[in-house]
Image (tube, rainbow over all chains, first blue to last red; front, side, top):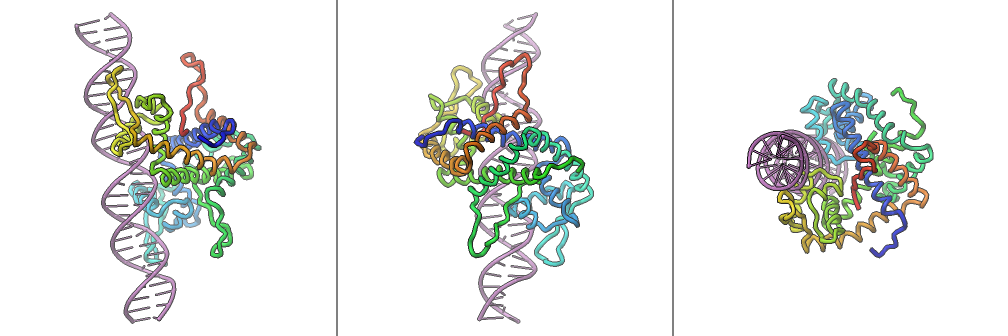
Length: 167
Length: 167
DNA sequence: TGATTTTAGATGACATGTCAACTAAGTAGT
DNA sequence: ACTACTTAGTTGACATGTCATCTAAAATCA
């Protein structure tokens, strides 16, 4: 109540929030109707398909897509039940597992990638001018730095790896 | 694979997705630590506090914040159990209910509003220049129109009300 | 080697969200 | 008034996400 409200800021937050929400819903619906998978499925499948051997350690997936370990574990269990991937023993480190794409999962993700790319283009890229895209990229970086200030302590002098949400 | 990829578009999507996700998490954490409520709680409580009688019909809440009816109903049930609000019979229309803020809920939301506003400022507004804010508002509108093209049929010639996600 | 601490991952309890019925009350059309 | 249709809201089954906890296998160190 006490902060001076710059004109349009409330409207900006309103429209920006609506956009985030609707974009997320639209991408979810799109992926569901095009490839019968969820965004969560897609995030994991794309991480796997990008990997040379089409397999990754569970924890590595968590780091790549910025999820909690337990979330990855639950999701893997569900996807395994649907035959999209499977767990393999890990020789190097008997504590770990390999998460490997199945033929089924490979088919799904290959079918989804193009559709997903098209949806991103249709809903997002094509709506914007080059200048707007550049501004949004820069603004996103600034907001990220605000939320999660780059740590510069003696342990990790190089910039910490930022979580990746989607492809 | 076949679409020409404009330079930086993949990076734009990556950083933009990370920003959306981290901003959402940050707002959630902030509200939780400042006022011990979730974003979902806050969305409902703020809709109620803004209303003259501090009460709204359930379906009206759904329209205001853009949720499904059943989601509102479940959320109301949980918030009622925590004493943030309560259901009242609706004289006008015996099918409906009034959702009314309790003293407890009023206290919670009053405490949360300023913190929420401060968080939006800190994480979002303060990170951006005036020009960036204007660009983002305009870009958000364009993306929204892409996703959900304004309906212009004979029934609703005026622009359809757009769902509101947050305050 | 043996004790202690880390790390990888799984699991169960619980909160939240979606979808598809379901109930009950208002609204029309005859 | 009688029937059919619509609307408001609830409910239960189920998917998803978080947190705390657990097990087992490294890794560290005396």
